[in-house]
Length: 174
Image 1 (cartoon, rainbow, N blue to C red):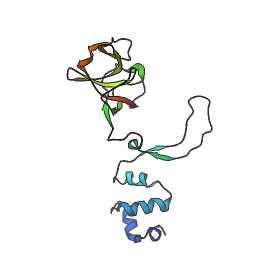
Image 2: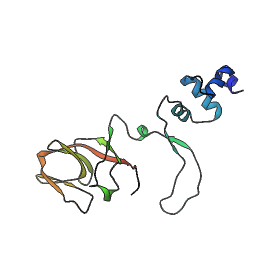
Image 3: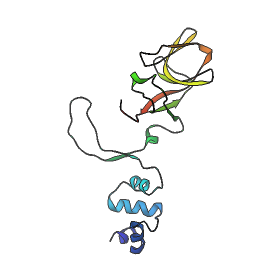
Image 4: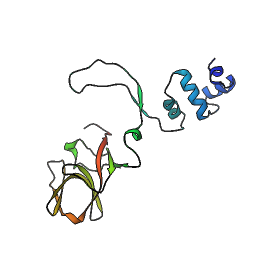
């Protein structure tokens, strides 16, 4: 019945189901729609594109709310334009008080400027660092979010801003 509905031969569908044959993108989309499944999920499973994350619904961070499962897919590039953003793997613990840990991924919006208080990717003497930005008259202060570390102070002309932190992908909970 499914083969008839999606207009492919039943023997071809059987081979697809048993991983003995592949299926084209358009046929896979028709199969997903016939089964009531998100086509992006099926395409990801088939290796044609990265599988998006599943968003199962909302969760309260305060007063509890009704638990309703409302599945949708989430593709990182929908929220963070890959033309304007890039990822950096965090090394070290200078930003732990901001919840940015060693091994996490920083989502950074490309920018050559920053406002006081923003967390930035800064280049100083050819080396990159992720720190809170503060501009004072003729100097730039790069502030770690770790009580065991001290501020880094540089002449304003010696710090190059490459981007502003817009998100973090946590790889572990500490």
